Image (cartoon, rainbow, N blue to C red):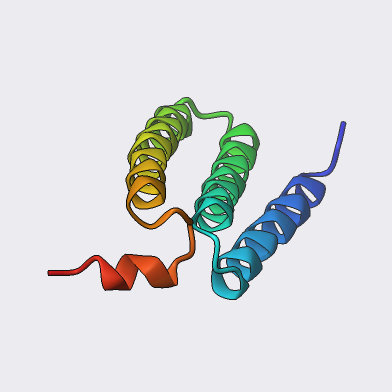
Length: 100
């Protein structure tokens, strides 16, 4: 059996990589992928604690996280497509210019 600390370490590493990608990149695609990475890291930690407790309740929250990630992907991809059609690029600085 694998130690739960290993799973939590992997979740922490994934979350850290997601935060670094979110803060340092300008491409909206990479920003949305970083958000997905952070959501999946949280889901991994949640499932680790569910296995430790042998409880079924966190599984429901896991599916909520997956549904949230799918909705975020759909909305994010539609925003990226709209931005690309309007500005012919997917730089995060272009989003601020679309206000108003």
